[in-house]
Amino acid sequence: MKYIDSYSKKGFVNLFADYILKHFNSDTFVEVSDCGSFLVVRGETNSEKFIDLFPIKENFIKDFPEFEINNINIIDIIKYNVNLEYTPKWFRYFDTERPIYSIDEIENFEFLKNKNKFEYPTQTITSKFPHGYGLNKGRFDFYFGEYVSNHIFNITNSDRIELKYDKDYLLEDLMLQFYLEKSIINDSHIFSLLLDVFYTKENLSELRTIIDKYDIINDIMNPLSEKPWLIKNKIEDIIVY
Image (cartoon, rainbow, N blue to C red; front, side, top):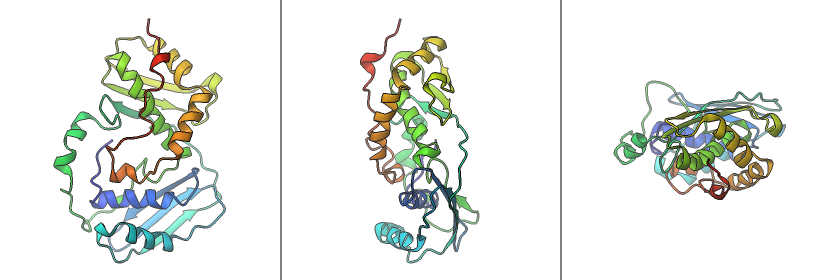
């Protein structure tokens, strides 16, 4: 995942997508496209309750005066009462203080910060996953994989891990795929460890409770701040032989 300058136009559309998402349930995705003089807000949700975006964008302007925006023109094409299908994704993690970023991205944080001027570009800029995506639309999987990788790096000597799993956590038949780069432990052992230690009903529920309380606005505004799921609560349960 690439670092996004919070005060760039790219940061703006992703932040606004998350800001809107906070008014919907977890079975929702919102995508914001900056088309210059107006924003297109598209998305889908299984909710039947209509959400008026006008007061949301007015509050956004007040909450983030640093963007120096007086008005936002919106075209709202969010679809309601939609049964969303989930497409599993590959998530890549690195052995860094924030595993979703490579060491190069983290080292460039300060260099890139505020380098992108907030101005209207000639091309359309659209928000990207995980921004605007509810926890049930892959965001929980994304954070949970970061939590898992934060443990696994300690024992595998890998510097990159990729995870992919199905949305439906059928623990007896978990659809889990993974790739470890330069691991000193064989894949079959790691697979068993993942199932036995991390992908248990109790652990998934515990991490979901933790992540539910997280303010997703911090993903853009404070990407390297402490994340509540980056804990190592399963170190004592990891057995390597």
